[in-house]
Image (tube, helix red, strand yellow):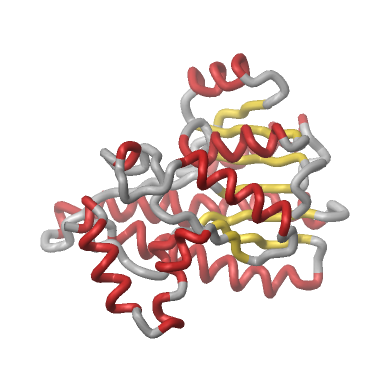
Length: 254
């Protein structure tokens, strides 16, 4: 993926990593479309950042994805990058099904079915472009589990393997698959995470991500240095230590 000259749709980007990445990509010379559920946030983003387009989308709703895809492609027929950013994270207690089942179903619908449906809605268009990229978003927790968030960990592991698999299938096309693997970042993904000393500052994370895309445009996985502790624990042979350290250090892992 080149760092500039693209038309990029980022659903789930009205705040946090998604919005920060959208603004940086726009500043780098890309046409950017921000997607989200809340109309007031979309209106504010459009007003505060001229040149950024917005579309309402709920990535947990198949009909909303189909409608948003139609709007985006009608307004931006040169779209060539899809970033499947939307995701939710829930603290769950799996001792009793009544305390986790609804949460787990919501996480899987948003974090797994959402990206699958998004890719399905755009893949034929992307395949027709001279050069296209699907950016999936997994997590360091795809590789080392946080005790408090089982469904989130599992959903991101699924996204990692989905990315690996569709990359193989798209090898005969012009569509690249790039997997973004964030560590804990100071966003509102979980209560208290925005001020957590354990989490990476958002500005630092996005700046490193953009630098990696710019210097490694053909990378399969975008890994800031901070996530490699989680990503490669099993390969290094210190997986158990990684899991113990993660759950001792993160306030949600205690």
